[in-house]
Amino acid sequence: MKVTLTTKIHIILLVSALYFLTGCATTKDISAENRSDNKPLSSYFDNGEEIPAESASKKQQSSVANPAPREYQPKNVIYTSEDYHDLWDRIRAGYDLPALNSKHVAEYERWYSSRPQYIERLINRATPYLYHIASQVEQRNMPMEIALLPAIESAFKPHALSSAKAVGLWQFIPATGRHYGLKQNWWYDGRKDIYSSTNAALNYLEKLSADFNGDWLLALASYNAGEGTVSRAILANKRKGKSTHYTNLKLRSETVRYVPKLIAFSNIIKNPEKYGLKIARVPNEPYFDVIRLNSQIELAVVADAANIPIKELELLNPGFKRWATDPAGPHRLLVAASTAEMIADAIAGIPQHKRVRWAHYKVRKGDTLSGIALSHGISIASLKKTNKLKSSRISINQDLLIPLSRSYSNTKSDIKSAKASRNKRTNVSSPSSKQSPKVISVRKGDTLWSLSRRYKVTLNELLKWNKISTNDLLFHGQKLKIWRY
Image 1: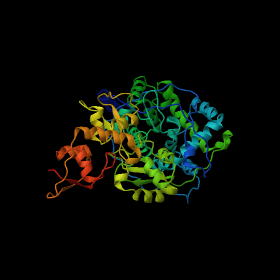
Image 2 (image 1 turned 30 degrees about the horizontal axis):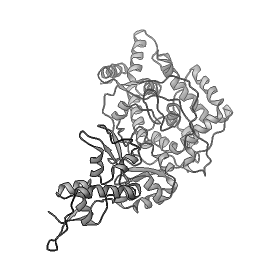
Image 3 (image 1 turned 30 degrees about the vertical axis):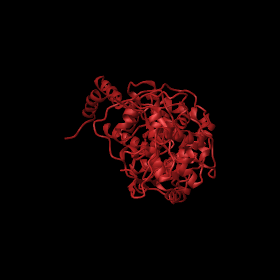
Image 4 (image 1 turned 90 degrees about the vertical axis):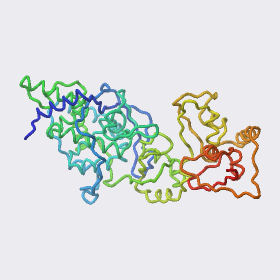
C-alpha cells in the first residue's frame, strides 16, 4: 500500500503528541584566524569574536517514530584527490538542492559578500572537519549543500552553545542528541564529537527526508523547527487548498530564513568571484585519522609522548570535556593525518598504568574529605589544594579531582605529615622470620585503602611491607605482599 505524504504527516503529528523531543538549534557566536596550509592545528582556535546577531535562539520540537539508527560505518569515498584537488570543487559537483524563489536568498548573499573576513575565518574553522563531513554526505547520496549546514548552525564551531542548550557543529539539544546515540556525561559530550555528531545529524536528516517523501527543503526546515511544526503547517495549508511548498508555509521568521541562508552560502561557495570574494583552497584529502584506544588516556599524556601541543588534540576531539577520554568510551582519538602514525606509535609506548594521572570521584552520602583522602592514599592537604577547597566541607554529588601519579600528587611535606599522623594511631606489625608472605595481584579499581580493608591490615603495614608510599601509583597485575593474614 502506498503511503501518501498526508498519511505520513498524520503519523508524525501522532508521534509528536507522544514524545515532544526537542531538536537542533542554531547559534550566533563564531571566530578563528585564517591559516595557510602549513600552519599548525592550534591556529584554528577561536579568539572570542562573535558574528553579528541576526536571529533569535530557537527550540525545535521533533518526534521520532523509529529508533535511532546504529552508527554509520564509513565506506570508501566516491571522489578522491585524483578527481578533484580542491575539496570545494568536489562539494560543488554534488550540489542538488532545488532552486528557491525567496527574497531572503539575495538578502543573505549580500550579507555574506559584504563580510569577506568573516567568510575567511569561517572557512579556516571548517577546514579540519570539512573533508570528513563532505565524505559522509556524499556516501549517503545526499545533496552536498548539506556539508555546509554547520556554517549555518554553528559557524563550524564545535563548542557553540545556543540559549536553547543546543551544542556542537550540528546543534543538538540534549534529548535529541541522546535519541540519536550521542552520549552525554561528566567526561564526554557526543554532540561536540566531530565523528559522532556528524553521523547523528545525517541520520536525523535522512529520516526527515524520508518523512517528507524526499523533499529536502521541508526536511531542512524540519531540522530547524521540528517535523511536528512543519507537518502542522502543511496540514493547515492543505485544509485551505494552498500550496504546501516550503515557501508557502506559515512558519516563524527564523525557519522562513533558514533554508535561504543555506542556499545563499552555497551560492557564495559555488561562485565566490561573482560576489567579489576569494576563498582559500581546501585539499581534497583526509585532515584527520582515527586512532583506536583500548582504555582511558589523558590528552596531556598523549601530547607529551608524541611531543605535540595539547591544543592539537583538543581541536579534533572537542567531545572530551575533561583532561582525559571517557573511561567507558568512545575509545578513540582523532589526530592530524600527517602525524597519525607517529602518534599511534607514541601511544603504544605508554605503559597502561601511566596513561591516567588523575581520577574523578563523586561524593556520596557519608563521605568525608579525610576518608576520601585516606582511601586514595593521599593527604587531605593535597586533596584540598587540587580541588581549591578552602575547608574540609563537601556535599553529596560534588565532583572531586584525585591525583594519582607521583608528579601530580602530594608534596613531600604533605606525605610526611600524613604518615606521621597515621603512625601515631597505628602500630606496624613486623613480619615474622618463620612466616612467608601472601602475594596478591592488584585488580582493576584497587586502591591501597581498599586492599588494606580487604585483607584486614592497616594502610601503614601495607606501605611498609611493600616499601611503597601513599603517592605511588598502583597498576593492574602489580604484585604486593601481605604478611598478616
